[in-house]
Length: 132
Image (cartoon, rainbow, N blue to C red; front, side, top):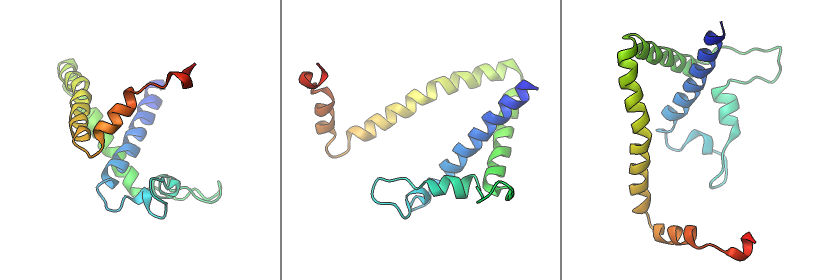
């Protein structure tokens, strides 16, 4: 029973992440609409993703985006576990290396941006008087 609860929470967090990932391909980003430069609109998360209502007695309904993302998460977990321990080892191998590959790609992209050298110089310019 505890494992069911843990996997439910994990898959729900995966569903929220998947909703944000899919919505990140929309221009302008839905969580930046109506906010000044560099801000974050919390209404997108609470109103659109969580489908939060004004009172606790009004439970609202099922959010179709999160529902389908949750089912995709369940499918991913099933496919990972369907073939047993052999496929889980291969998946773990890919999942441990993939973040480093993504970070490497992001590093290369970031280093090509204008002002990247200024940012790196600022990173390593230690102001000891502010530390001590």
